[in-house]
Length: 267
Picture 1: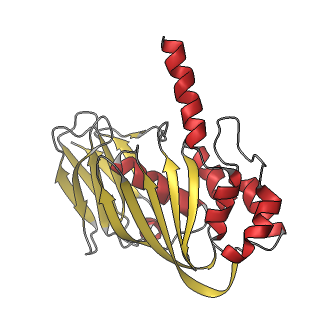
Picture 2 (picture 1 turned 180 degrees about the horizontal axis):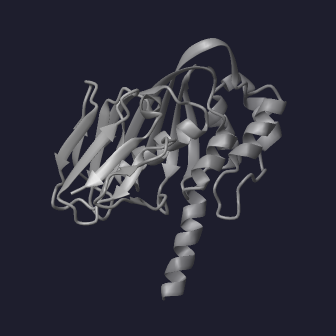
């Protein structure tokens, strides 16, 4: 019986999956290109061994046939939305932020957060001369076991990415002791194990300008408490919530503001 249910679920999930033609159609969003899209994608299968779309191959075909141009004539305000039905809020934001930075979109501004048990939505705006490359973004997300299931062009410079976070993971947290520990320049938010400490003291380099963003997480990476500051701080001391086991430490605006690294001490 278990086997029958598993097989049924497998075929049901594949039956509900979008065809490659539908995926390409959603990404291009141009009715005038319909005939060309059918010629290129109808009956074709661009999926990986897990059944997820191969966005690198799909976008290559589109670019080769002049249906997708990732280079803009001038810096343009882009709106990128990310949705998921199976993600924890903080992990969702962390992986997207880190992945955007790795893709070269460093100076982005979050504009919308909507989190619920049914669906998470996260929207950012960024000025760029380049659109987000679907193939590159797929490669970066896949390292965290996150997969792009659909990309919808909502307007000329607005895209919505539907993501599967079902197997998402994260880099192991940093362990610091009760003595002050100097952390290297961050390329992503620091993630620290709190090791049952009651207080945390954080100090920025005197030559940096730190605008603290601190998220305390429980053992399942759910948000317990957060600290956000739009005022520059040289140091910060905070009580650690009882349920917190991890902390994410970053900057409210840009990690370049703490390019010389932070010093952290657990008490």
